[in-house]
Image 1 (cartoon, one colour):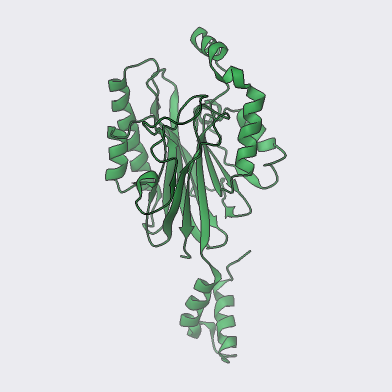
Image 2 (tube, helix red, strand yellow; image 1 turned 90 degrees about the vertical axis):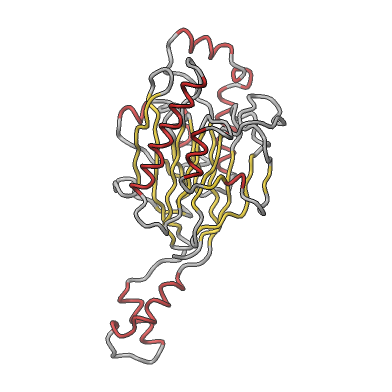
Length: 326
């Protein structure tokens, strides 16, 4: 693993290498800078977004109970879905996995405690009761072999309420700032889930999704102080390709990874919520990866993964990037 030396250590090393022993480290500033840059090297970053479909244990209303009894996921089985999701994450090769609908005390605990994930993967938790308990809260996981994060530092991770869905349940944006160990580059990941049309009209919820996307954009601008720090936004946006919310994200300088020309794109144009059916239909992509491209972050490929269509009613999507040393 590449580790940064102290600034004095770098300068001293540079002085020794030049035969300048006895000269103050402060006089080796040029060599110090060169040595520090050399410590980082180009790194691959794979960011996965996956709505894993809530299991619904905490819902007791008649409508939710009826939905749970009759929904096709019952034919797949909760245990089978849990196993598929855990296995998929463990074998994904991702550095960051952004989940939507990972329920507190059920799916989240299974993910954290699974034999396949608990040794190397960490889940960023928050102590806000509403954010912790509500099943729609997005969840960020990361591979500790590749990344570092301190979730107890308010400048490294956080959660923000965006508004509510049609049933008046809260919706959230979660974020984290990571250090990539290989490149020694910091970057930000944001993860959200905008409300669906359930129990309301599409026109009403289109307006609400656009309003919540505006909150997302404002929050990104508030948090990301250094414009050179890469920014990646993922989620289930529940929005049509030409909706106001998606157009707002693009107008704010966020690129849709699926639409970048000249890179390999797998599953191009596929609808990302096919239900528990073979995913061959093209249509609106509810699940997306947005990013801000700069000298530290370059996208290399994008995938809508059709091989994983029985773990959830949504398909996982992921983008692969190159991180350059900062």
